[in-house]
Image (tube, rainbow, N blue to C red; front, side, top):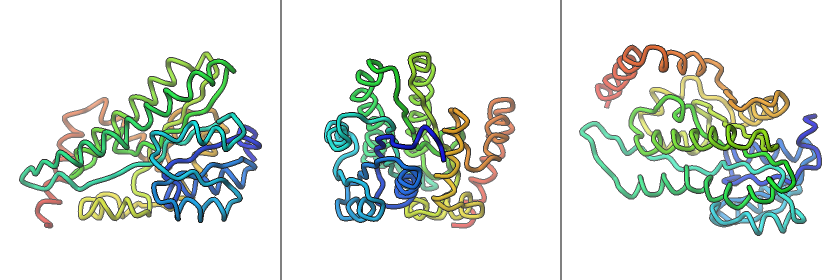
Length: 257
């Protein structure tokens, strides 16, 4: 049992299925009191009923006050998990501005808004935990998904900023960066996801367990796929080699379509 989880008031956004539902179940199993958020009210209520949690459906950007009330006035852990993915980088260079706008709002700005609402209380009491479900795309990139890749880079950068700015004031931050996870979102990545992510895809429950270990170790970067660390090092140390490798994958994707 992770001591930081027991009796904690936890909010998980996008928890109607996939990684979010797995996180909600794992926190509840660890003794936390869990608010389950999802745009789909039926899914949120189903997961909440299953785990003995509280459903607070709606836009993840605006639920902090209601979630805080539901937990008796205090949110101890906030999991910014809700996200969207589009295959909007078709060979030939299609640009879908709506997918960009939606990605910015859900994948990044929802995190910013939540932190803005949570930080005053956390700083006053000297503690709080912010969990950002980023993606390996936030450390690396993803072919065929420019809006997802760029906004996940932003989510990772924001999580880093929160950690470096507030860790001495008791704020804990964790960035979860898996590669493929067997969820509906993986299916939304289309043929690019089939090529790059499906071969090593893991279950949502594996991501939840990796987060619990990250919390126990007080570790910022949580890598459910440990090999991502090597890719990240290569990207930093030899960017041209890394880009050439990714371009080879891009060409393979284009040839197979």
